[in-house]
Image (cartoon, rainbow, N blue to C red):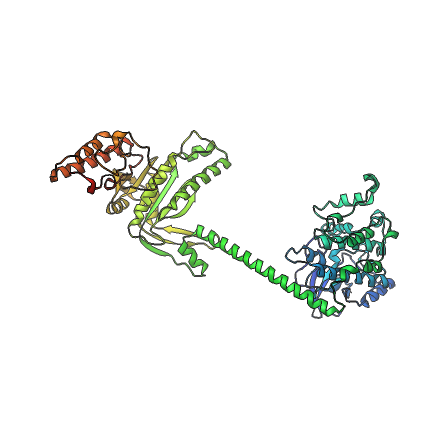
Length: 621
């Protein structure tokens, strides 16, 4: 091996600490993939006995024995090479929950293991000494091969790293009681000890829950119970075979392999006879068996691929839904199609900003978890409301809430109305919002809205954000910061759009000093004079609020003033039909509306539609 190059650039395929192969890597030797089993020794003394054992192992040839390729004795690269197996160890196969092992699979694996152990016991090696599921590998034809036997002198007295020591210590789960009790057990083990280990592996194959079942007991507990049955009433501690759903002859075979007295355990030739009923489904022709196993594996693989495809589609749907929550739908769809999202300019949009008045003071007397719960409850409430409007939630930063309408899908001039209606609805919702940890306190919102042009685009690759840029955004933020609690501060640009739409009641605030803008004329949004089904109805008024002489009318529940309503009602019963009377009637409606606004303290807009309350077709004039 001195003149041959070993390429070990391939990372380990067996890097699971449970498999017992943390010290194994995969490399290439003369074009063949091999396991590189590192030996932690400074030097190797090639004695005559060691050379002889190497020759013996090198000459071992059996279909269920993993071939020994060779060894490197040049420090610091002292290692043992064996043929690589694509499917990993038996332990890896058993841990693969996607792989269904039917009776034929199990029978084939057990038969291969028994035949391989018979060959080892009949050879000059005599015994394995470290038989466990991680030392049984499965090749690409689903044939089990036994490995890591012999060369005990080569492996002895290693200076193992701590992590490798922990891995090696797991081997006691397969060791026979007499070997655990012995201070210096024989390095090559014993044949009866191999039989005990086979019983553990048989339980492992049938149960697929590890060598001792689940929950797996600790190594110290296993060693203590196995070595000292007299401390526990003389009861032998073995894996829970009674939980297995398998024929009695298999359970009996396991129990015989686990006998406390090594002389009472059968040899592998007897085990082969004992387990003969298990092999009834196997054909005498090995190629027929192989084809049958591969066909079943292919069917199982198709089922696994189908399940994995469904899982992939579900995860893809979750990812798409998450992206749709983070970004506007048209933008998210562009990203999902792999298209680049270009920044886009919008001629006019309306932007909403709000924050909680006194949030800093409230946070100072609340725990961090209470603050998180408060914001989560509040924004969950807000998020449920904005779904009823043509708006897009841009972001939340602390107690600040930002919403826009008119992008990425343009909606004419409706953006101002959507934001104004939303602002009124959110202000109404905050009045009844309850703080969990301070139920007697109420929150107040400070709201600002502004209309104008802006640019929008996706920024960033990790956690991409849909951001808005432009002076319109800054002005909307200033509208909020210069506003007052429970009032909606509106810029003049937004007010003009609302006037075009009609139906919104605004009051001039006057000139306000705005940072970076100078003096600006601003307004308070008081309410709406059109019916909005999203606002909950108020309690019904006394019977005197109902219009007299009209049919199919709604109560005048929005008007606390009785005078104007009564005047309007009496007017509709008159027989005067001239234009001056009609003008007087419309003036009466205006007075009733203003009285309702004043009675509400400019806080909640009356939800009224006079054409619905008093349709002209029902007037008796």
